[in-house]
Amino acid sequence: MNDLFPFLEEKYQYYNLNFDIQADPIRIPRQFTRLQDIEISGFFAATIAWGNRKAIINSAGQLMTLMDHAPYDFIMNHGKEDLKRLSGFYYRTFNATDLFYFIEFFRWHYSQYDSLEDAFLLSGDAPGTFDMQAALAAFYQHFFSLVTLPFRTQKHIGNVRKNAACKRLNMFLRWMVRSDNVDFGLWKRIPPARLVCPLDVHVSTVARQLGLIRRKPDDWQTASELTATLRQFDSLDPVKYDLVLFSLGIEQKKKM
Image 1 (tube, rainbow, N blue to C red):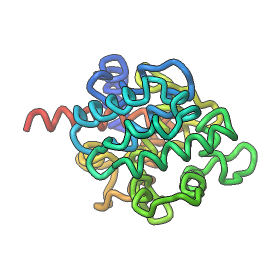
Image 2: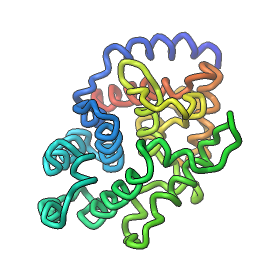
Image 3: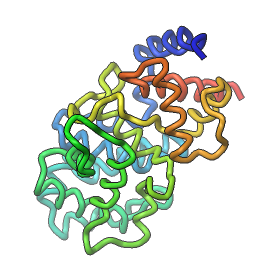
């Protein structure tokens, strides 16, 4: 396993400098400078991040346009008439019903906290400790705690208690917590060492090719196994190699 370290490290240094941000959903939150705008736009972009990346970017960009390119201000100050323009929005199975609940949640959350980071710090971990599985379970409960919850909307947030890989949540957390040329590094209370690798189909394919994981299902247990393996290469920032595995997977797909 140690012979992979030079390869992974070299590839990380390369992709950190050469990753095509404009072709990735992370380009959506990179339009903004206000913390809450970055959080909200990033969360929406990550939530619909399945399928074709161009379609994801287009739909997330359309949503930002509908929110006047000021998502935090829109969420905190919108009225019923403002919501009407969003009624036709959808991306695959994510539709206006889901969108309206997300907006209601964000307004409720930001009326209590300055940052969305607080929503991932509700698990009651002892000071100086952080358990991602517990954090995601507490976040899920927090997110779906409003009485207006439509049952259908629950499928759009990974439930770690059901062994979901929580790929999109882990990707969003990577964006917010890690700091390099790609990721924002805006959140300081969640240690990068405790992040879990987003188990994208490209990531899992390349990880199996390299012998980093052995289990077949793409679930939470496999995501944890991959992250534990990556910690052997960098214990403080294991999820930086997500950039490598994902990029190699994209390159393989282009050659097919």
